[in-house]
Amino acid sequence: MVKICCIGAGYVGGPTMAVIAVKCPAIEVVVVDISKPRIDAWNSDKLPIYEPGLDEVVKACRGRNLFFSTDVEKHVAEADIIFVSVNTPTKTRGLGAGKAADLTYWESAARMIADVSKSDKIVVEKSTVPVKTAEAIEKILTHNSKGINYQILSNPEFLAEGTAIEDLFKPDRVLIGGRETPEGRKAVQALKEVYAHWVPEENIITTNLWSAELSKLAANAFLAQRISSVNAMSALCEATGANVSEVSYAIGKDSRIGPKFLNASVGFGGSCFQKDILNLVYICECNGLPEVANYWKQVIKINDYQKSRFVNRVVSSMFNTVSSKKVAVLGFAFKKDTGDTRETPAIDVCKGLLGDKAHVSIYDPEVTEEQIQRDLAMNKFDWDHPMHLQPTSPSAIKQELDYQKIFDNMQKPAFVFDGRNVVDAEKLREIGFIVYSIGKPLDA
Ligand code: NAD
Image (cartoon, rainbow, N blue to C red; front, side):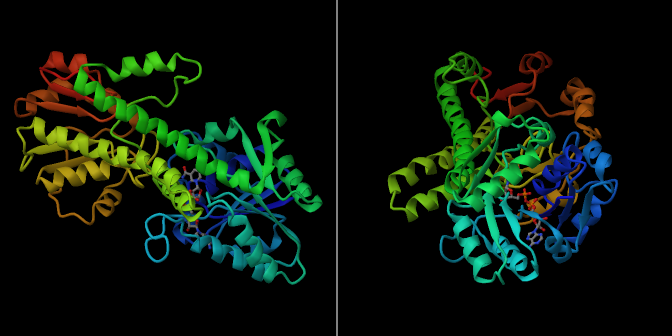
């Protein structure tokens, strides 16, 4: 029986391994983590992350061929294939601070692998890492190898939070990069055989190591760039009377552009896009390519601009101050169908409002109060619970929001600022609200 161990039981490690386990009953999959609360949660009925469909997948194979454990060394030592899915945040100090990826967790995982291994291993980069990381990992492993053969593969993960299970069941592609040596090719083949249990052969792409590592950064940069492009257009729409939804529809009909990922919004968030673009910028700078670095920096600049533009719109609409005014923020996670609040634009929006002394009430059915308080911990603010908004699930929020009742209880004029263009603006205007939608003609 092939044994897989995944180091890191987070948003990527947990769901990816659950899907491998459910699709490959003959493979034993153990997900390990140094965080005991996280492993305890994976072994309980309340999983540590919210992801549609995840509970069912975990229930189907946990205890059969899927296990979660804090006994990191034991399971690493026993594994044939080790996925490393630890966090790779942006460095906060030292060389490259604010841009470069912090590979501390990766390095300690690699050193631990070298310490405990007694048999040959395939080590798979699942985390998003800078291009050429495999070279550094190889050095750490081979210099401590005790005669063990290590093959490093790059197998970046392209899942999106909120649709992770769907993405993993039907990936657009699985990318595997390896060394172009006989041993490297053998390792690529071994990993390919795992995915081949459910992914069609033509969707499994194999490349050299550096192409695979760079493709992940490139994919996130392109996706974020698309959001910044449509958001930049949304500002121009507001200035000219064009409607960004109509513009997106019109340009998306061009088959060279395509309709996906063209929704204007308050900006992108999440733990990946900004971090990975900053990482790309740093790599360009280190490789003597400042013009290329500047090009990608603009994607983040427009995103920051969009968030502050939104806050400024709220404040200016409410007669240039929100001081002591009650503002309810619906939704705090960085996107729908997730409880993940890392780098959510809601933090910037709330900070902006709190900075102008608004009384902010925040509600998100997938986010706990402690989480919100932690995310805003750097700010002093008035914690003011929403009175009329206590739904319990994303579907309930749609059913239970009684806008007429909300309107009746609000000071007038009553405003709705839609950072995702999801409300029925016409209906709300009929009730009497003044509605601001991103990139659309404004109310008179
Ligand atoms: P995460 O923070 O949710 O999970 C990482 C886990 O690794 C944590 O539970 C942490 O305790 C554990 N860990 C750290 N060092 C360890 C060690 N030495 N031994 C054992 N466990 C250790 O992070 P994530 O969101 O799952 O992301 C992981 C990687 O995948 C990152 O590089 C990220 O950029 C990339 N990625 C994330 C997403 C996403 O949507 N979140 C998508 C694709 C790729």
